[in-house]
Image 1 (cartoon, rainbow, N blue to C red):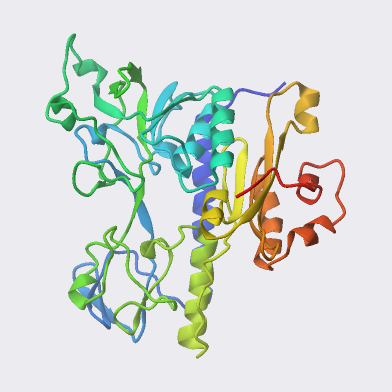
Image 2: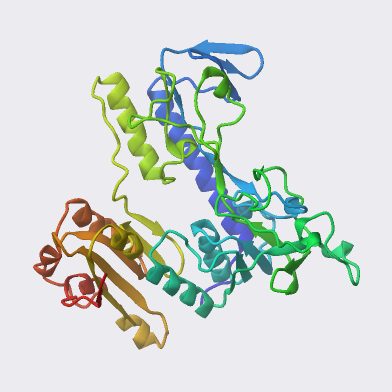
Amino acid sequence: GCGAFDWKSFRSKLHGELDRLEEVYRKLLGNSDVRIFDARATLDDANTIRIGQDETVTAKTILIATGGHPVRPDTPSADLGLVSNDIFLLEDLPKSILIVGGGYIACEFACILNGLGVEVTQYYRGAQILRGFDDEARGLIAEMMRERGIDLHMGTNIVEMKPESERTEGSQPTQSDAAMGMPIGFDDSGSKSLGDNPKSDTKSKAGQPIWVKATNGNEQVFDHVFFATGRAPNSHGLGLEELGISLNRRGAIEVDEFSKTAVDNIHAIGDVTDRIQLTPVAIREGMAFTETVYNDNPTAVDHKLVPSAVFTQPELGTVGLTEEQARENEEIEVYCTSFRPMKSAFAGKADRVLMKLIVSKENRKVLGCHIVAPEAGELIQMVGIAVKAGLTKEDFDRTVAVHPTMSEELVTMKSPVRMA
């Protein structure tokens, strides 16, 4: 039989792999004669970079790719909680955890920890998790998460939290909005809905059981509370605004289609620009920057029709428009099927999959595809090619199915389930 899962062994191997990858990247940079400074950098002017306190270097062109960071909600006792950077630094796997948030990071970690045997509770202040994804798909993901034992609460947030050791009978919320009868809410960016900007990821005071009171009246003690309430660009303290480089209200660097800032020789790519926060998109932006600046070939990255996946259990793969987005623009046909795949039925599992195509009624192009299934990330990569190429529903229909597979449904759905 299978051996018991060993968190410490897993964590050691994970950090070993991260170290190996960093070494590979450093070697690649070294082979390209790139100088690496292991220090904080700020901009003195449009061509001068300060390294640490005492050293400066100059450059004709500057590229900012500082990424982003998880944020803590601006609420009392938030420093008792973890953020995504902290999870794999834990010495021991917790027995229970409360995850606050409803985005892809919250849902992915809920599924990961649930799969490792942790008792997972998840609070989300909205009506449904995975806001911005197709409604039907995210509804099925929520259903499947609950089937797996995740205690998922919508329209719910934290009123008060404190170390269990400090709680006394009859304690009431203090020094918070909740004390005045106003439940605290966080939007998907991590900002407090009744307050100011979120706190950045400062040192956590997590590590002891935490008592939590929720807006639904529940009171419960968790080993850890994990905030997955948003990410913010790493743009502050770099000297950008002093040079006239514009930041939007979320702190993202504003750039044009060629990733150029308001200062001609300074460019920015990746999560610090908050366009699409995906590694492959940042890589494309970097390649386009090279073409534009060094090969005299102005190249803009096409941010439309980017396939992506949410690595929940099961996964969600998506490309193009959701049903809700598409029907705001034109008349559409929706082709959709949901079923228990053969292997699930054979094994007696309740797991269902979803295959969904959004089709333009006017020109028959497939505007979007949404898949909820095991390995949906693998499936959507291939469908992304077809959607990006502008193929029609009839092109899909002319493709012979591979049987028996889940994905054969994508080429065998003959009649729309609804029109909008």
